[in-house]
Amino acid sequence: MTAYSSFNPNRYSLAVAPTNTLHPSIQSKLKRGIDIIGAIVGLMITLIIAIPIMIIMAISDPGPLLYSQVRCGLHGRPFRIWKFRSMVVGADKMKHLVKNEAEGHIFKNTNDPRITYLGAFLRKTSLDEFPQFWNVLMGDMSLVGTRPPTVDEVQQYDPHHWERLNVKPGITGEWQVNGRSSIKNFEDIVKMDIHYQQKWSLWYDLTLIVKTVMVVLDKKGAY
Image (cartoon, rainbow, N blue to C red; front, side):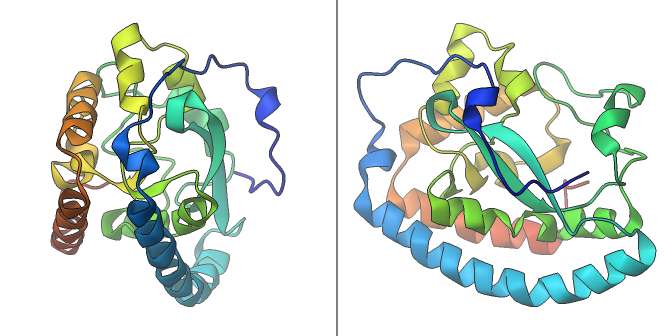
């Protein structure tokens, strides 16, 4: 698992969904303002927690502190997402050895052997997601949105699946407060993402953020 310093989106051949209108959340300057403030605060916390994570990782599972992967954002545009590394080095090359327990265009395994002991803790507490505040600050993601899919997932999309990409992906969203990793049916995720778009408002975003904090503290549904 290598953290990459540069990213060329042209390397990824992926059709971008055509659109004539933008979802109101994309046009909201107030939502973007909240994202920027939240990202700055989040990055400050990230810098603090990165120190103990780096020390423990160096002892228990030496390798890069960060893991990056290409995901698809608004209208399918690729971007590089960042996380604290939670799997062994080279885990992407071992993916074919792990059984996919999910249905549809997602990959999940309850007891994925590639996850390290530290990684299991990071995932359980959602601390592995904190570097994504950088993606929010850069504008590729939002604090609240839809689950950011991988390129290989999007390449298999049916037409109706593209609707979930009409908003920016988020660090949290309806999938986070309604089961997190325990949701194993891709169509259920699509329904939640569409529901979010239909119900969106700044107040609803704030409600989901509060619910996310409660879910994370409860440590349910993550692995």
